Image (tube, rainbow, N blue to C red):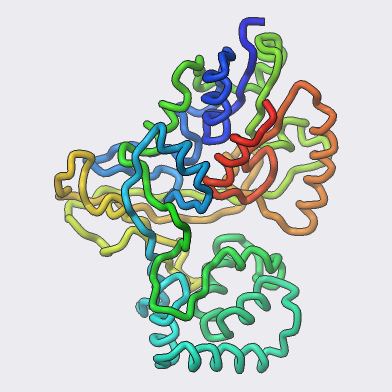
Length: 368
């Protein structure tokens, strides 16, 4: 065997594992079937703009260990995400806060906002929320649910809100303050030199082979290393023996515009169901409209994001953690636990809706 470890996937989990192992004196081979490293965090420069090719990635964490670890390899800017929701031309602040409540109901105090939400919750006769719709109404009332959550969520997941688990909406902050910061994390920002450069530094010292499909070359690659770190879809690893897990796929329509400012914000959600895309991303605002040398950019790059159902052969983005898929995953997990040579890690291999800091924390805690 030529390597101590074979790492399948050059995304964040695989790259952190590679860095840890290389630092410990291990020899690693990293393979990825894509043409680039960094997985869905991959970013590239277009007209001086750093474009998040697979959607916006704003790093945020309260884990000081994770933050200190990543700062060994990159500096972060001080970007704070403040999303805007567009509902039929009406603009609302996200996450839901006093600006949102004032625009929706004309209230000016937290007490008034809470009273409206409670009255709408009672009118909907909701006890313990059984699904996403009931959880959302409990949190922010039926008006906000109907205008700002229902259409967007059903576009995103391709399912009625009543069929989605309640925990999904708990990720969305609700504040009775005038605070537009989407994430309430202590540490936030975007790598100054981009996520691709971060991944490149994490992978330094490892051999990296791109456009290499592990599952199509499994027999040969397994002979190359004593142990394997697998970050791809867990159901694909086992040849879909128990059936396909559900995923959502995101597609983008990206264009370069010969103007300096298209929408005035990095992310604008389009919450009406009749609008086919979920949001528009204007990438330059993740770096305050400046290039890596601090110069103002005369052009802008925007991406319309469409959420569609995953089909076999597509690149999966995030898992659908409903009851049926969770039960199916447990069967694959039992099979994975019997693979003594293989560590399964990351969003696809663990079938978890991880944030980036959780991926890094998981990789740092992994028993390699």
